[in-house]
Length: 207
Length: 207
DNA sequence: GTCTATAAAGTGATAGAC
DNA sequence: GTCTATCACTTTATAGAC
Image (tube, rainbow over all chains, first blue to last red):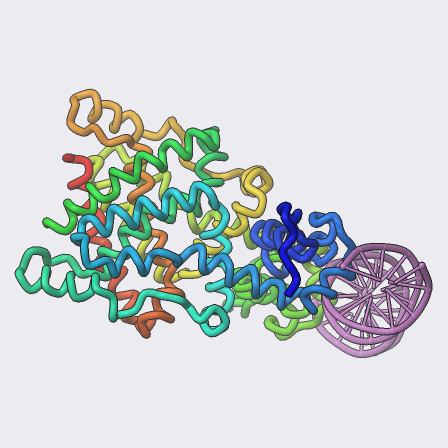
C-alpha cells in the first residue's frame, strides 16, 4: 500500500477540467458550450477532455448531477428533522437556500433549463435524490391540517416558499440590469428575505 | 393602389417558417436549434429560411422580440391606470399573467434564459418596452407609503408578486414529473392562484 | 499524461435549376 | 418562390508522437 504524500497535492488535471466544465456549462448550457471552450478555460488541451471523460455528453452529465446534489442536499435532512416544528423547517429551508444561492447564483437557471429541456432524462440520470411522501414533514403537516389549523393547500404553500426563495435568483440579471443594482445590493436584499419569507408564509398558513 | 384580395389569404410561407421557428427556438434555445430543425418543423426547405430571414440569428432576434412583447404588453397599461387602486392593480396583473402563462407556458423559461445568457444584448435589441419609474403606480405607492400604511420594501413586494405568479410555470415540468400531476391539474391550480396571490400579498402589505 | 494533427460528421449559408 | 446540391467552416472525437 502506497502512502499518501505528506503535502497537499495540487488539484489534479481531471479535477481542473471538471471545474472548467462546470463554469462553462453552467453559463452557456450544453449546446452553447464547445469542448474547445472547456479546454481553453481549463488551460489544457482538447484531447485531454476525451481522455478523462470520453465525451462532452458524459462530462455534462457529471456536472448536472453535481448541481442537482447541491440543489437538493440537506433539504431532505431539514424536512425530516423530528425535532423541529413546521415553522422552524420553513425558516431553515429558506435560510439554507438563500445562503447556497448567494454562493451559487447560476445554479437554479441551469438546473431549471436542463429539467425543462428533458424532464424524464434528468430524473433518471440523477436518481433525483428527492423529497418524497415518506418525509416526516408530510405527517407533521397532515396532523396540523387535521386540527383545522390551516386551510391552505400544501401545494400552494410549498410553491410559494420555493417561488419567493428561488425566483429572485433566476430573475436577478434582469432586475439588476433594469435597476442598476449592484451584486452586493442584490445579495443584501436576498439576506433580508431569510427572515421576511418565513414571516409572510406564516401569515399565509394562519389565513 | 392595389386592392386587397377578398378572401382570407392562407398563412404565408414566411409566417409558417416564423411559427416553426418560434416553436423550436422556444423549446431548444438558440444554440440547441439547427436551421434544419426549423425547416423540417415548417414543412419547407432549409434554403427558404435564409431567403426570408437572411440568417438564423436574425430569425432568432425576431422571436425574442415577439416573446418579450407578449411578456410585457399590457403590463404598463395596468400599472399606469389612474382609475384603479394598488390592490386592484395587483389583482389585474396577476390575473393577466396567469391567463397568458397558461396559454404560453414555455415563454418565461425562454425569456429568462435569453436574458441570463446576455442581459445587455437583449435589452438593447428588444428596446425593453418596460416598466420605468414614470409609472403612475410608483406615485401611487409613494403616497401610500407616506401615509405609513405599509412598511414593506416595494422591491420585496414586486419580487413576491412576480415570483409567486411566474415561478410555478418555470418549475412546472419538475413539479409535474415528480407528482404525476397532469397539465390540466396544474392549470387548475394556477387558476386558483389568481385570487389567492392578491390575498396573500394584501396580508404582506398590511404587515 | 499531454500534446499535435487529422479524421468524420455536422452546420449555416448560398448558387443555380426550375 | 421553392427546390437540390454543395461550399466553407466548425466541432467532436481519435490516432499517434513524445
